[in-house]
Image (tube, rainbow, N blue to C red; front, top):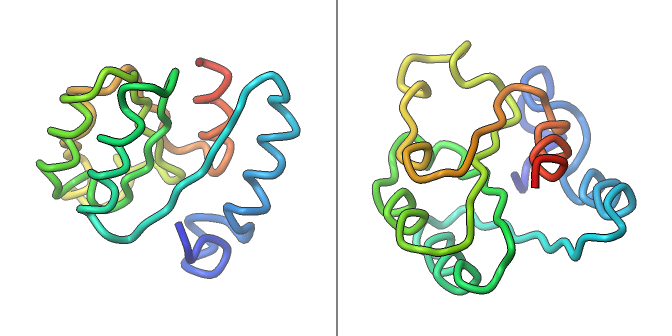
Length: 126
């Protein structure tokens, strides 16, 4: 996510997440939104444990960790806040290894493949 707008714009688009997040805050003025990003699996698990008992809902894009991290899947399973798994690209239209999610069995729902709009759709569902 830290390279959004720079990495593979044909897949992920050309806008940074910070710019898009500002649009979400504006579009959902009645919600108190916060954003956290890390490339470190353990830091993501720690954050889920930190907020997963007090946040109304969590939208999680774990990137490639979705397909590899049993730990993140267990963290989602272990918290009380409902988690919506989000992906910018359609992971099922990509490499076969991206078809597996360790988060999905514990998520309230999944939004996949609508570009950055996946986040807006997830917020609308909340």
